[in-house]
Image (tube, rainbow, N blue to C red; front, top):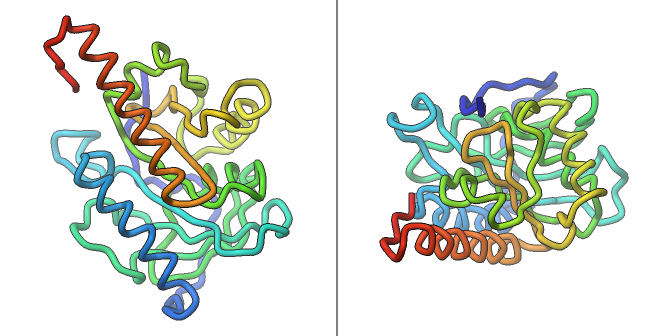
Length: 230
């Protein structure tokens, strides 16, 4: 059965409570906030008592370090844990993950909030290549339920979200499937969980929108034109 609870941190977090500098992180945060607003309006990020046991779902991140940074030290800005349900977010709702050893489940970060429970998965994706600069983790029943029909790379259903195993699974998919080209994967063991990434927030957003449109088209065909899109 697919796991759906979210918000439980499964890694060793060494976190320093300190406000993020607006001059350094404000512009990048605003780009993420703009796309988070779009995702929230589409129901792909948020919190609903009728979904996933009432836990918040979805998060966004962006690299803040130079492309030349080594694996495990590719710093990124990410929405904090338990912020998915907030109607409005600001820089105070983000933290910076400075180091991420996804295989060992260790994260070093700073900010006024703790990092998202999916931080190690984001870190594992950034470690795939320096060209990856933005990651969206969203929840889309329309895409997730039709992942096979859409030929999306899909993680092993036995692998839980936010785990060391998920980090290794991301690496496997990148090596053995079309993930480098599709830039999107379905989380087989995380109900409705979808991850997309790109060189920019706009790039990741376009990947998401294309997949959502294809899923809606597939749903319409499957239902004989009735377009039941859930």
